[in-house]
Amino acid sequence: MAGYILALDQGTTSSRAIVFDAAAQVRAVAQKELTQRYPQPGWVEQDPREIWSSQVGVAAEALSRAGVSPHEIAAIGIANQRETTLVWHRRTGEPICNAIVWQDRRTAPFCERLKRQGLEPLFESRTGLVIDPYFSGSKVRWILDQVPGAREAAESGQLAFGTVDSWLVWNLSGGKRHVTDASNASRTLMYNIHAGVWDDKLLGILGVPRSMLPEVVPSSGEVVLTQPDLYSARIPIAGIVGDQQAALFGQCCHVPGMAKNTYGTGCFLLMHTGHVPSHSKNRLLATVAWRIGERTEFADEGSIFIGGAIVQWLRDGLGLIRSADEVERLAVSVPDSAGVHLVPAFTGLGAPYWDPNARGVICGLTRGSTAGHLARAALESMAFQTTDVLRAMQADAGIEVAQLRVDGGAARNNLLMQFQADMLGVPVVRPRNTETTALGAAFLAGLAVGYWSDRDQLASLWSEERRFEPRMSRERAGERYAGWRDAVARSRSQVGAPG
Image (tube, rainbow, N blue to C red):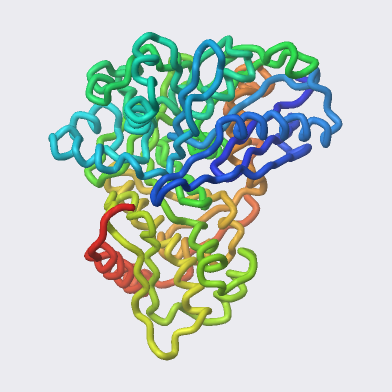
């Protein structure tokens, strides 16, 4: 099929648009940063109007840069920051408040109350998730309880809830479709991943009217055409998927046991587990990877709250570096971390600990410790946290991972990737095309309209740029990992409460 695929990659810190050709090569990219709002400690918000305007703006810019007409776009694929929660009026399309971002912790007291009531096993058995402010369900309840008139309007059918994908499709279609895909629905604490439906019992516990919820559609399939006055052509929206599942698909991890890790603001490790969701004994998440037609595939996920954000902290908080690119040069100024460990539990610890009371620690300091040792310990913290998750994942699934495919900004750091291979004891593989999130959305959209024929063709378009083989002895790696686990224990013994 002639033409191109347009991928909309709406992330936490920016909105991006990428035009791909039939060889899955990038023809043009456009990006615009998003304003982050922190109205109270632990609160993170974004303006829904800015999310929309920035995304539609970069889409037009990417088409212009590529020299591509909207008539040449075969389909649009959407990948989005997950769990971020929006509520808007169905009649006007106006949001009733700012979007509550996935990082927001304001609903921690409500989540703790649900846990004390013994409800976590129920939620876990139906959704594959733990009860945590991270997910959308408690955020929707907060909006209904705290925004004046919201609950009454919701109960009378006037309000719509959605994650960012729903908001974009609503606006792209001129309000004609209120949908989400199965991967995003599985991140809300309200979706039964076994039955593939919104769960009435969980909705009752959370106090969310069913009338607010979007229709759940496949991740790959034509949903709706863009509204006539948006572009000069009506383009099918044919791919919708959460950003981390998009990266899994873009990395062509299509069979059980294949895994990828995205090193972004946080780190997100997903392993394909097949057609039946796993039950974790190690507090990992079971999530829908994607649904194509009537076929749902699942993944285990470990979410690490602070990944590349630790480098931003070295830059902005400590002033050790002037730009993120300098961290590798500083870290290689020393041969190792000399026993220094940094546990970046700034907002608690995610998988596999899920400890909101953990706090960041730096331990192992001596008079000889330098900025280089601290930079190295910061990078190593990403690899150690990933090792925590992958070990738990392999124990749960009974599957040995043969390699880890990597993407995200920090995956360009060679020192980090080598250390990651050393800790895991398996090769770490970096692809030639690192735009894996947008590529996954493009792949799903392209499959839906016949732009690409099947997954075998997609796999032929994927290629590796560099492979990092383990070099460290397993004995030495075990010693380093034991030091990390001791540092984590110190982090979790700190006295504190979530902000």
